[in-house]
Image (cartoon, rainbow, N blue to C red):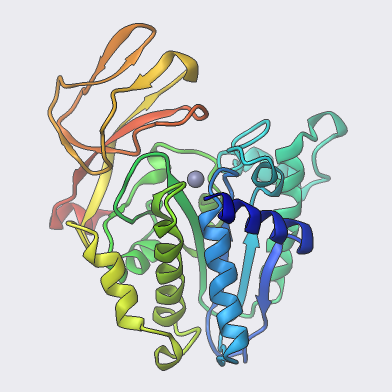
Length: 325
Ligand SMILES: [Zn+2]
């Protein structure tokens, strides 16, 4: 893993925020890829670099307009999730209004606000060059506990149809529980948007899974002809083969909020999507057991020392409910 961080360091030193920007031939969709929005998640950054280096070296024709960029450069440099604020909880309507009306005042300019200003400028430039083509946004993440690859979307029909094409389970109502994600900003300006979680932060296999997902999105969206994609079917099998629940849709029932991370300890051994029963002890907080208020599947149990999402409980969505989403 040390090698991964050294590569990240090289990338941060030698390149600005943009990993790649491809104008395309004007026919395909527009796709923005983000990685490293959390600074302890280097995997997606390297995956984007690897895929776009390959595209360049092999002179693969690109139809769509593509942008790939690094999220929290400062936090990545320090190998930490964030410095002052979680950069993936800051894209609230109030902050966006500020961004577009004179910006933040001097007092408010902490490291993440500066990142936010730079990312927004990049995205506004990208959006300004579009003329009516389909828009996609893919945000690459990793988790603090072992996990099969999965996606999460907001309650948006255009994102729902996009996520269904991928051979991975997904959670369809992230915005009911998390506010201020970058995805939320973009899916409210007509992007088909998803967060993709490849696996654990420090697992080198997460990079391969990120690469597979990037290729699939490029192929499925029509940005690159599938014939040019190396081992296109292998990308499907890599992601699908690790999952008991490909194409299955879940919804979040419950989020356990953690006020003080140092007082919260998940019991060891919980794995994403693991079935749990109501009343089961899941964690200790302030010396007392935290039990599951619902039966379902555990989702994103917190095994890191930053963050306020202790765990979520999710359940499978039936066909009828799917129609309602
Ligand atoms: Zn993340």
